Amino acid sequence: MSTLSPGALPISALPWLVAAWLFAVGLYGIVTSRHCVHLVGCLTVCQSATYVLLLGLGYVREAGPPVFYDHPPGTPAVDPVVQALVLTDIVVGAAVTALLLAIAIQVQRRRGTLDPQALRPLRPPPPSAE
Amino acid sequence: MTLLVAALLLLAALSGLLVVLSRDPRRQIFAMAGNGLVLGLLFLALQAPDVALSEIAVGTAVTPLLFLAALAAIRMDRAKR
Image 1 (cartoon, rainbow over the protein chains, first blue to last red):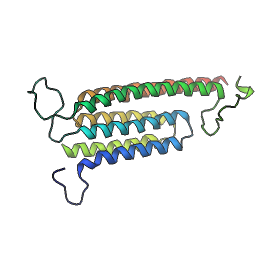
Image 2: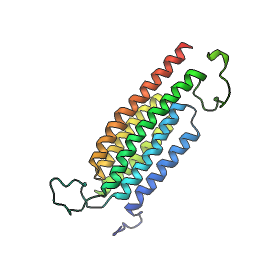
Image 3: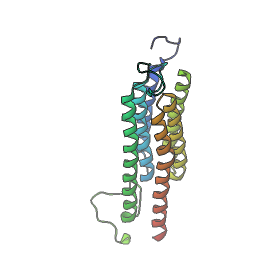
């Protein structure tokens, strides 16, 4: 942050604020959700906070992508390590989403509802569900 | 350039809020696809083209299709009852 525009936050603080905002919003959605599928969607918002945080961490101003195919090594580039981490994070996030959706389908089949308030753990399913 | 990054960051925050606030899961799917598209453009502006490619493929196409398939299975189960 070399130059600050007067009366504004430095631009390098914005990714942190947006990541915190996305995580808080996703957590709020998880806590207040009344539908398990909606809950999984809120979890993806929580995960997008980590993408923004990591890529904002590795971002270098006035630097190119970390691909040195057509420019010489030593050219200013953004951090490639966090980009690899985010790439892994996206793939793991898709796998977690698929797993949680499969669990949600099984909950609907066994209990007949997807409202987390109506689901009681460790209780036998109602006889009408069988 | 930094103005573009800042605008896309704010747009990502807004679309994440939209995903959470759309309580109907069928509407949430569309919000989620839009969120994935905004995140992909943001990653492109943050000089991460490979991450942007995989985010657009996964966040805009694969995840909403998974949600659609899950909702279809849930609706079939509810119709059977």
